[in-house]
Image (cartoon, rainbow, N blue to C red):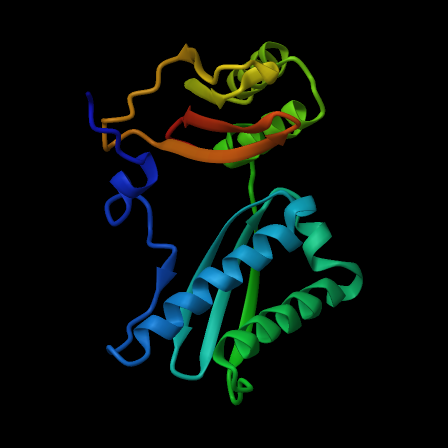
Length: 217
């Protein structure tokens, strides 16, 4: 049986930066890690309509930078920048809840980065397919349209796996779809990966997407 490697983790530190960038001693490392996980979980749910794909966190002694990557930045920014202030307050609430002590003298800088090509974002493609499965759209139709959009958007290749009780089958199975070239084990190639669970009436169906991007992306 082959050994599967996450394409993102395989390239972290070489081509992809770390999602959390800070230094801490043994006494604060645990708390910072738990805070990062909590902030990511809340923001991924809160900014789902904005097409969020990832959250990066940088920490300094008295400040913190939170970078969100979204396909629709206007939804996050809001009218007159009111949305950014709401997100900052949400981050502070999460930190206060996890620390059980009010956060004092910490400056939070929220940066909103736009995803230039949403069609080649693996997480957004997987989210769209998962939504189609939850709405009972035939999986082959959804996957075929998704692969066509990826290739039309400039992707070199796309690979999609569906696993679970597809279409409500009594026995779970895995279906694989492939189009173009996806060299997952070549470090110099830019491979985007995303996985999203789809909650159907018969249980969860896992959606995994690999997208081979062009270098200029």
